[in-house]
Length: 248
Image (cartoon, rainbow, N blue to C red):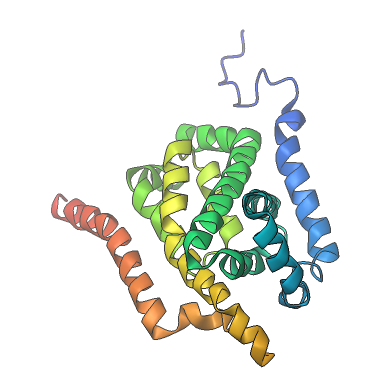
């Protein structure tokens, strides 16, 4: 009798490891970078090289923008240490605006690279398995699908969610690329503007020999508006849940 079992999502794929290669490369580079680049992508490194950076920017503004955004993309795409320092550098070199725009652009492109690598290597198959499953797993997948925009904005706005996690999870549950890019670009604006503005004031911090207050995002005047945006993003989920209960 012929085998009537449903083929797995990997069926017909002659080289599954080839599909996973980009994600494997990212993870390997991230692991190596965590041990080798920590001292080079630090606040002290920025302080030590601030005059050279400003001189290069003044002589080559467009080139500086291109190199900075490219470096930010690499840092985010390979989850290298120093993303916060890069954001501060964007403010230090280019002021809050257009520094925030450069930071957000670099972060979004870098996040999209991770998203595509994870989706290409694992996400499509995992999403297919979740769609084909029954019970709790299927209900979780359907719940995410029904509230994708809200969930995507929430994981970007909540300061406690690691950026790398917020890039991987959408890829593993089948989020469309357009939704991921839009929600990433818009969702990271509040945090990016806060840290870019801190970077824009680094000149005075350097003059005093101090370090910037990176915990500023958790201060009430900053955190409360962000939590308000989180509540706004969660509102559609709450309303759907209430309507579902009324329909029981």
